[in-house]
Image 1 (spheres, one colour):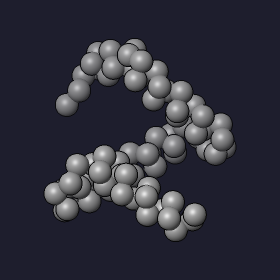
Image 2 (cartoon, helix red, strand yellow):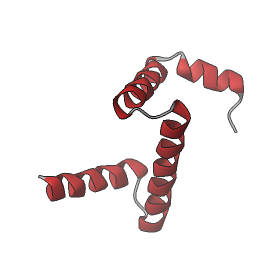
Image 3 (tube, helix red, strand yellow):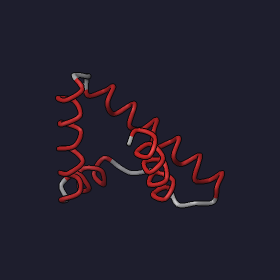
Image 4 (cartoon, rainbow, N blue to C red):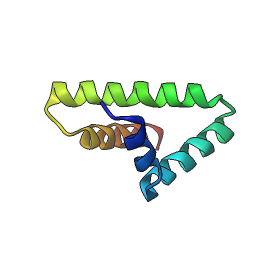
Length: 75
């Protein structure tokens, strides 16, 4: 498990700042509380993790495949 100090160090990196900016944009654009945005994001990551384990793929590949299917459906 990550310590608070490790999390703080990660958030101070460029990717951490990118994560914070993304969360802020989602909160503003969706009009949802930060807690809800984080909860829903974590739930999606957990679902991707389960799918990856079940299919033997990397999480990024599962996410990319899901986006491709969605874009084809909506396209």
